[in-house]
Image (tube, rainbow, N blue to C red; front, side, top):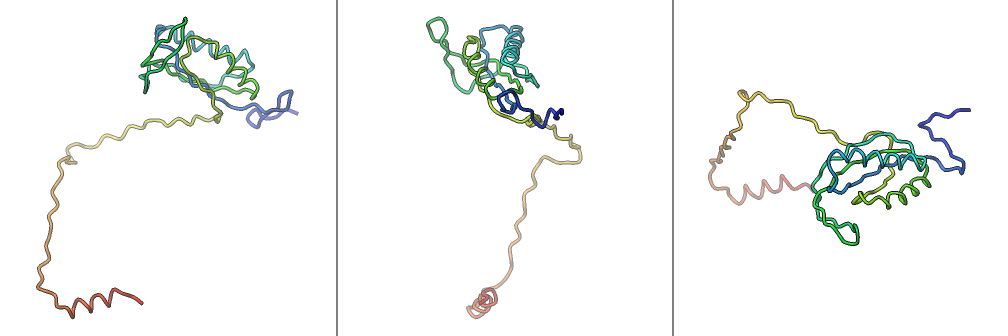
Length: 169
């Protein structure tokens, strides 16, 4: 009996495969054209531990929020930017742990994270607002005119009567 691929199948030890996403930062000392090779190495690492590649976001040079250090050759290097990318894959939980051990050996990774996620694309897309007719709309703000009431002084008796009408017991 064959099960649907999306409904979940069990492996030899009874664990169901899960969907994971690998977010990674590649050190900026490598060249732009070498980032594709690094991504290919990450994909082959996923496949070597038994994972199935689903999708990826190509690594792009990104400014980091803070300076990061990485030990390399007996000394620390500081980085203010790196190549950020992500890969979504399916694997058994034990395989994801094995992937973590393998990624720790990669000297070109500044940082990485493996998280559980869903198969669907959950990334928000940027929508461009429709163009407004610039002739019909004015960007200049019109001042609001204030209208003052023209009434005479209010007696204490009228004021008490108004308060009684507003207060409901």
